Image (cartoon, rainbow, N blue to C red; front, side, top):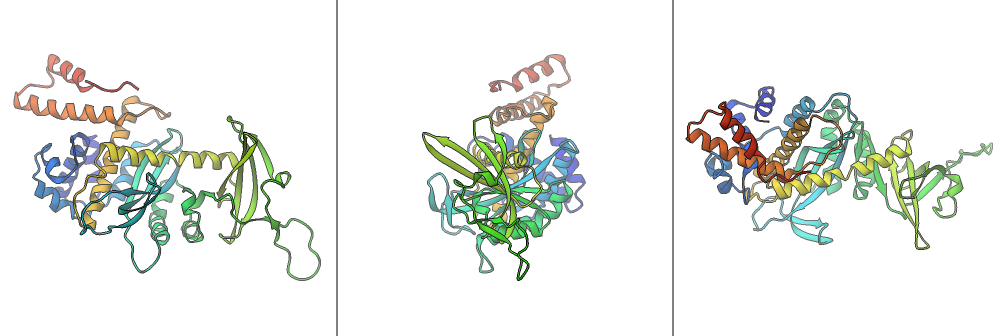
Length: 397
């Protein structure tokens, strides 16, 4: 993918040649390093000194523009795409790092001291794969809450998302707050999310006008157990979960939404899940499909933490941390796109990032070895050995 990266960088007028050269090397080394992705260790796997990493990490780089062009060139045009947003906790030692604060850590189910990043990704619905678009470190300030911070990120990205054919933003239940919903819908996107089972929901009044006074808007609070007949039924999913839908009012949002009620029974107990969309005309099954696809963002967090060094940055400035988290996720994008290109398919496939990392490491090692031995890679025997050992130890999908 090196030539693809160079092509994208050439199309970005704001990127000068020295920075472009560094970014090409940075993405390459994040695919092959072993151990921790700190400056000193990264310098062991390329020709750049650790001080060069330190200098360039503090320089601004437009990762959103890079990923937009990259994904626009490599993904098939006309495919259905949605966006998703979520935040992830990052462990960080020390006391002088910018942005160090208390954030919720899902693994321990409590707040811990560290860093947090908020990620907006693009999801290809046909391939069921997520690609990073923009990651921002969560920095608290006096101008608003963290929900305001997440909403501002979406507002800034909304024109670019719409330009990429994205209309829907999917988020989990944490983002189902009036500030975030207003920000998303006000930016021209529709939101798909999840509500608490005890959310205050109201039926819309559909009866005749009484003839005097203000027309009645609502017809009482919704009882999820006793008023199923007022919902539109859509049958059941493969696992037997019943699906119902209706346009209702969410009191906390101060707006109408398309509500999807998922209902199941287990051992005599009844369970519910409430999904919603701000697009009142969106099909119930499509809402379920979009929310299910949201989980692909979790694989971005997992793979970037395990394979491209997302958690390893030892820099303390917010500029360097921003560069590192976005470079880590962009390197993951490149590995996923390489896998898609090699398989020549747009359908869902199993992607082993561990295998691709091993392949890239061996290729980098062989390139250096063959260059040192002055071996021509066009030679039949050398080319055969290169192709054979590139997949040495790869995990078969």
